[in-house]
Amino acid sequence: EVKIALNKKFKKGLKTAVTKKNKITIKKLKSKKTYYLKVCAFNKKADGTKVKGKYSSVVKVRVK
Image (cartoon, rainbow, N blue to C red; front, side, top):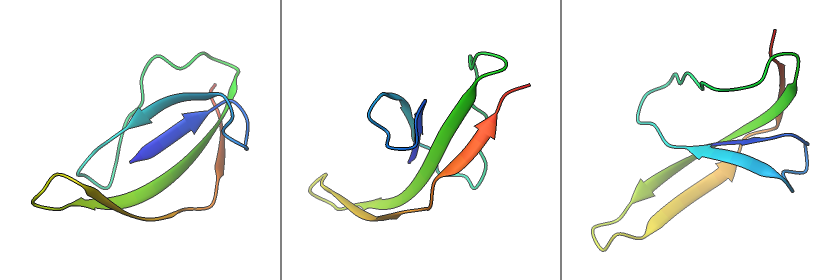
């Protein structure tokens, strides 16, 4: 699970993307803006509930 926001406190979260791969491409981000991302691994149980790990440290990315 990848969370994307415009500030590092994630108060204005933009997107949450879920992938099973180690790599993800996020489209439709505006140029010359700074985004903050953090990643969390999770596992789904048989009853459908999620067991989440801790979020990674926040990464700052500036779109060209």
